[in-house]
Image 1: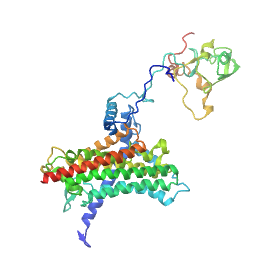
Image 2 (image 1 turned 30 degrees about the vertical axis):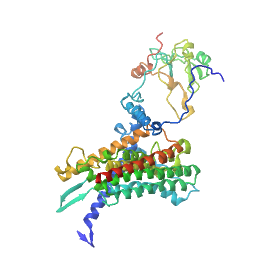
Image 3 (image 1 turned 90 degrees about the vertical axis):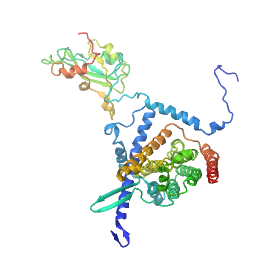
Image 4 (image 1 turned 30 degrees about the horizontal axis):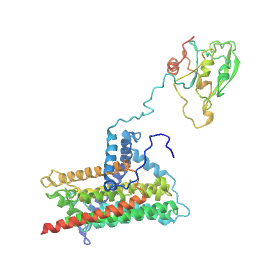
Length: 352
Length: 182
């Protein structure tokens, strides 16, 4: 299967994997919108969507269909290219992060004489965490470009707020991650997961403060409540996507849910053992069963995180802008720095 | 300034303590409260399937009554229109012709009888005014409509089905508030 010095089997395998992961992320994002409305309803003693199909499970399809058939409006005064690019970029960056996440260990299949082990990870690059950071930072361009291209003061203000918020919280997020990376000594997501599987406790046991900081910053990075300043409806009309309609608006809203899903996966991978099922020794199972167990374990962790995202959204009010900045610069960054210093000191002390 | 009551409390304006500035204890408290709502009973009534019963004293849409032989009771005397404070009722009278005795109870009947449901305040004075027990207020309400003229209910909307030819519909439309006097 090697032709023109390209392993075609690997190409096909990766393409299938990319297709599967993108469709699964889209499906989960789709049903996150349903889950969000359902969770909100349950937390507020309501019923929530329950008319489209049994328990309303076709609601996301109805919503999507509605968005597709809405009129597509591009304002006269907007910069057309950037106006279209905004939602595309938001969607692209949301999807790109999933490339370096290990979704499971390996699957083995023996079909038509092809005997292959397939890693359930699109790219095991040795700078996985750095890649995620780079792409997540790009995500702010989606907001910024969308807000600027709309040529609307409120959209621009919302975009500015969103951008400054994401940039400030990225710092604390990075510093809290440095402490974790000092512990693991590797930037590869796969290695980080494997270290957690091999006998040790999950990273959250060593880095509880780091996890908490990362978690808070993840809320800010996803532009989720209580940090959803960039789409503060009552202050800024609708935020950076005010001028958007139809599926371009849909992409922005969708990107938020994909971001939420991906950041849940990242948190599960970095701090909660990724595809590690607790109290089960994966090495004793056959390869394929272990892969299924791993994926189920990862998804269970992810769904718990997504629920917490929604739970927090429907509990807390939005931060004021000065409170947001105070929290970010005066609380989270010092705490992250202290966490980093303590971790470093402990590592040095144990080395002797 | 003197306080009006002794219930006022002065607002404390001291700076937040470190614990309060962390927000976390308050956040966890709030999250516990919202979580407890998961186990609360949902008070929603799923409307088209589930309906809340009307109160005994509620007054709904008017019904033009028939007697037990299926004849219209209304004689178009106009007392209901006079009694109506909202001036919602209009009617035109006509004389009963020979051979129409099975349709109309009295010699005079309402050829046209209209109630504007947008004007009607459902006070029930028409029912009180009626000497023939020809109109009464039932337990239903006027369904929504897209046009104003859809709310002007004519005889075909108000008249109860004939008990002799359509007994099922008659019993359904009659409700519990039909007058019992003959």
